[in-house]
Image (cartoon, rainbow, N blue to C red):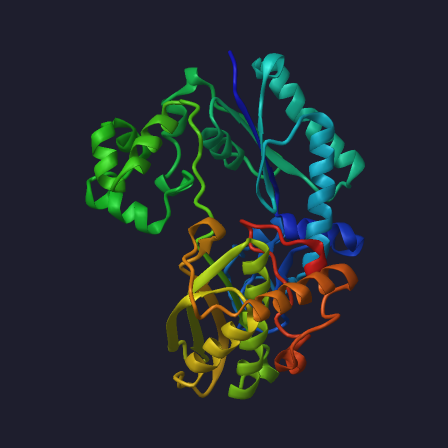
Length: 401
């Protein structure tokens, strides 16, 4: 009996880092939040907090009612990146890492003797022990072993915390039938709704669908891949390259006014512009959104010529912002989309190479001498606003903190 993939999922990662850094809150219900305000949402919860029903997305005010003794910790995203790197080093000391799926998930393709199930289980236990010994007792992980990466990820979610689950070809399909549709990676609420409309309500029914039926439901090759993954075929998981770059920020109570929302919006734009250039991309579209305290929203967008310099993007920002109508802003978001890479660009007589060179020079100076060594005056009042956060699907560079 053999497996091809080992998948590591760090349990309640952000909360585990907080408990590691502060021994006094170990074993207690902890919620990581963007700021200490009841109107924001929980970013991550410790397993002690999850027992009260608190999860990612729970409103802080509601979480405090659910668990009166809840300990709130403002996210220390620089620390999360640091410990992520330490954890990767520990895993690498046991087996090469094939892919870092997110800040708290890692995939390893197994080869040779490691594919033997007994050896794979021993490897998984070695990883667990080394994390405990070398990083700390606050950290645990759930590990899945399976014929393909998709099923290994599914297995890692089947037993938490500190689980170790194997899915062998011999276990298929029956071991999957205990799961709900949305327990399978790639099936969110919208896809579940599409499956339901086609009469598919269970994993057993999903497995019974033909490859053509799944192609129809998915609207293309995605359904065929899903058909093969469920059967243990080890085909590549395709990841789309960045098609957009965006940042958003929930305003603290003191900044919930049009002037501060404008300043924060500028800061978000500058962060997105730096990421755009680092990717070697240009944008052709900008969108700005503002959500109000009453949950209403306003947004504006602008199509533009290919652009990556902060100065031109700032002009587009000003043009869009003037069209937005709001009084009590709660959240601001800025998104750059319709991205193109160097080899896809079309020449334009309207390009401004001086602006591009200056933007790259500012990036280089900040990278060498530290963040905000040099910056445009338009973000002076918002330098400390909208600090870098971690999306679970990407790990920012430590110099961004």
